[in-house]
Every structure is written in structure tokens, then in C-alpha cells.
Image (cartoon, rainbow over all chains, first blue to last red; front, side, top):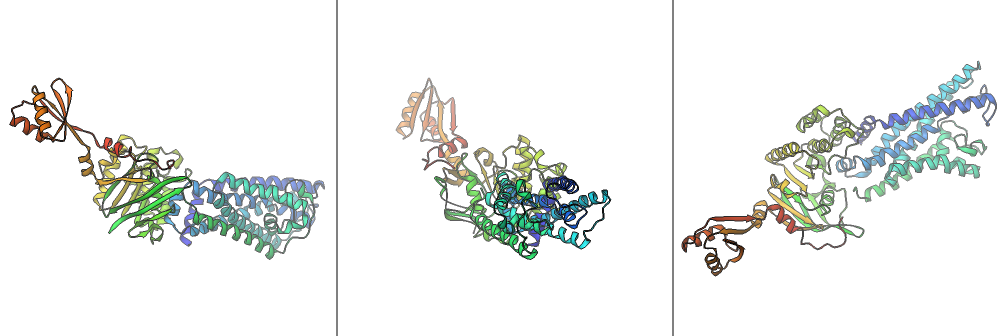
Length: 261
Length: 302
């Protein structure tokens, strides 16, 4: 299994896609972080004032793009395999679930790196706004490290979910659309209409692992709707893990049965 | 024991019966051409052989077991299906490094196969910039990477220029000389006739012939054209000897059912001078076309 994981990581290292997605997540995180920080100082958009702990937590935990793009990477890993390289991979590894597991593992490692970069970018940009305005940093280092660690975990799990989705739909375009629709539209809509369901929505739960307030990673009007309290860290992690395992099991079942044509 | 054994293999994709009760065997060290027109079911059969597609019925075995049960499959079978399926954004060297990792061979072997297929100078180029011929070479390099004893090659000459096709023939002859078993698919008999010892011919998913090239060549022998100033008398003599004679006009006749030697001896015995004695060869391609033209289809082709 370690060998297969090493091969999948080598595959990721030797194409440009992961680097492109990483660059995109940094750019998107900077933009969203700058917008939220500006709102925090302007007192608009429901963002707490930046000199406060709540305000600094908000602008240093903008890791939604890390999670979304990690899932996109996961889709590209497994669905891309069907487009290029399936004959080699599955003729070398006839026990296909092992190949899929290795893909999920490699995407998980890359997802953790995405989470690290997203968390670090958000922290640096958010605190840069605070320092630039001459305010004190009240958010402690342990909290920052915890948030970044949570972002790494959330992005890693969503990368694995992406691998499952990609293996199920076997189309990169469809898989990416599914992930984006779920994270950007469906969860924002469902969470906005039924705020009490928010803690149990997998993308939202993953964002709370990184310290984002519940619903803070929603898009559109749902972004400003206050809701209930998030699940505790372990429960949220277990929920996202359970989703990843469920999607993975279904994907493994179909990958074993389907023809590689 | 046969290295490759296909027994009653069938594969149906919905309404399409792509492979229909196919059986054949390939012995160790044989080079076998796997022939059929486009859509005959060749690629599906090769995918069935490699465990990429599950059979509807029957089985395909390599070394006596299904591909999926081989402990180190890439070391047993090297496959190049429809050229290289390498990621276009990856360099040739990195593609082979990935394959080396999957096949558990050292990365040192990567440079050896790049050299073998003539891609050393393009090793760092991304596959998307490769021509079709270069992709075919990369596919062959991938197949040869783990030094397998069995090679399964799907239309490896597609996209190769004449020089490349010449190179491929030499490479495959060398590999056969090393005792490897090679199953090479093609829709051109002439292409594999230069390297294969025997052929399996498929049409509409069914086996239409499995014979040595020698036997196939015999099938291709046709009529004898004779030119003689005494053609009319010679024709009567040949018909009396059981041959079928067709007048071609003037002093020429076409004779079926008698070899050139028999025609010559008869003419000599009865003093009929001959000015021309030519064997009309139908040609291997004609035989191939004839064999693959007679099979009625069951449903649309794959």
C-alpha cells in the first residue's frame, strides 16, 4: 500500500494541476480574506470588528477555498485516471480498491497541504490587516495553529470525498460541477433555509474544523444568516470522515464492478 | 502449457455482442497476429485478457490463471493498448517512473527502455507534445519496462511512419528471438505477416480462422494462367484430367484444380508448346478479406 501511495503522490507531483489549484486557492483566499477584513473595519456584512478576538478569528479562518479546491483535486485524481492512465494503473493493480485507496490517500496528503496553505494565507493576510491598522493581535498562537490543523484535516477529508465522487461519476467536468454545486449552492441553500441543519452538513462541518463560524463559509445570502452552534471538533471530524468513508465505499463497489473501457 | 488461453469468451455491452464464444491458445514463445477489421472485437478481447473488462461468459487465462490473480502482473504481461494512455501533462520519463513504481522495478530501467524505443532525446517533453508515433513508442516502452515474457500490443504500428514501422518489425523480431510470447493486434494482415508465425482472425467478435501463416498462404494460392498457341487442345486435355478451364480469349486460358507443375507436365506429354505459365496468387490480404466478409453479424458491431 505504501508503494501505491508513493506512486500516486509521484503522479500528483509530476503534473501541473495540483500546483495550479494551489495557486488558485491562495489567490481566492487572499481576495476573500481582504474583503472580509475590509468589512470588519467598515463594520458591514456581519463581520465582527477586527481588533476583537471574534473578528480576528473570522479573517484568519477563511479556508473554504482550500476545502473546495482540495475536493476538486480529488475529483481530478480519480476521474482523470479514467481518462488517462487507467489501463496502466488497473492492469498493474487488478485489485482496484487498493488503487482507489491509494488515490484517496495521496489526494488526502495534497488536501492537507492545501489546508495548510489556505490556513496560513488567511492568517497572514488577516493579521496583516490588523497590524496595518495599528491594532493588537489578540488571537493566540495555539488557536491559530489549531485552526490551521483543522483546515488541514477538513481539506484532506474533502479531497478523499472528491476522489470518491470522481470515481463514481468518472467524468472530470461532471465531478467538479457536483462538488462545486454541493459546496457553493446546495449547502448554502439548505443551511440558509434550515439553519438548524447546518452543523450536520459535511462541507459546513469541515469548515468549522478550521475554526470558521457556523455558516461563515456559506455563499450568497446564507452567509449572513446566524445559526446554531457547530458540532464539537471531534464530532464534526467524525461526520466528515463518515461521509468520506461512505462515498469511498460506494465508489469502490462501482469501480470493482465497472469495465475499464 | 499455453501462455495465453481464451476459452468460450463472450462479452456483451447491452445490445452489442462484442466478443462471441471466442476460443484460441497461444503457446510460449509464439508471435501471433490478432487480426480483424475495425470493430471486430480485438481491443475488447485484449481488455478481457487484461482483466480490465469482465466477461459475460468464458474465461481468459495467462499462465493458467486469470490476469487478476497474477501476483506481479506487469512482470508477466506488458500491454500497450491503443498507444500510450499516458497523462498528456506528464513527461515521458515521469510517465515511465510512475509505471516503474507500479511494476516495482528500479528507475534505472526507465532510461534503458527510453533508449530502446528511441525516445531518450524526448524524455523530458510532455506527452501532449508527442506525435502519434512517439506515443506508440512510449506505449511500447511502458509495456517493456518490467521485462515481461508476454507482450499484448494493440495496433502498435498505427501512426508510425515507414521508418518507424521498419523499426517496430525489427524490435518485435528481437523480442520474439528472446523467447517472448507476443500477441499483436492489427487490422492489416500484411503488417503482421512479416513477424507473426500464426494468426487468429476475428470478425463480429467470432473466430473465423486460427492457423499458421503457411496454411494461410496455401489458401491464397489461386488459379494458373496459361498462354499457348495450342490453347484449345490443351484446354480439352486439362478438362479431361479433371481441371476447370476458363478461356480468357486468344491464346490464354485460366486453369483451376491443377498446379503449374501438373499443367506443365501435361503440356509437355502432349507436345503443346507453352509461352506463359503464371500462378495467380490471391494474396494474403484477399484471403483475409474473404474470411472476414462471410460472417453474418449478430446485432451491431462493438
